[in-house]
Image 1 (tube, rainbow, N blue to C red):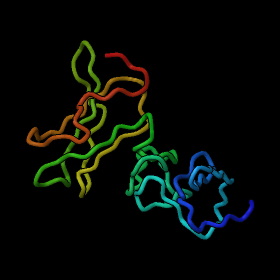
Image 2 (image 1 turned 180 degrees about the vertical axis):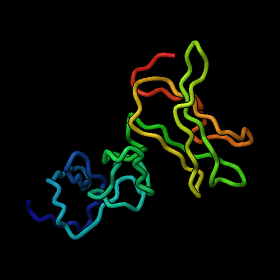
Image 3 (image 1 turned 180 degrees about the horizontal axis):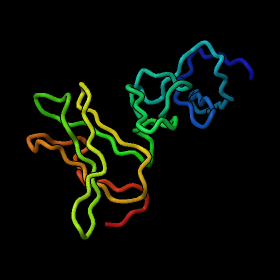
Length: 152
């Protein structure tokens, strides 16, 4: 890896193992070296790129429901979100599937102190996310969540 003079250069982002540096009209790409002394955070979540389990999407808590090394915010087989209300911690959230015979509760999750809930390692399907107390609302706002290429 060659040394770069970073003076007057703007470090824009790291993608796929490359550090991309913009200098006026010129783009210089260098191979990423985790031994570098500086910390880069492309998604502004205060987690350095080389430690971030979801480097392109902010997820400062680094939650990983299914412990597969990919953060919930980037994991295609994970349902996650936040619940709002005056009290956010300890709220039961049901993850269900719907079939002709009715709604089948797959899991009941309990929110953390920030109102966060997540369930990973899910199969392709549509899932219904609902709090047991309907005075709460969701973020993201959708309560029907597709995993994979599922069709409702």
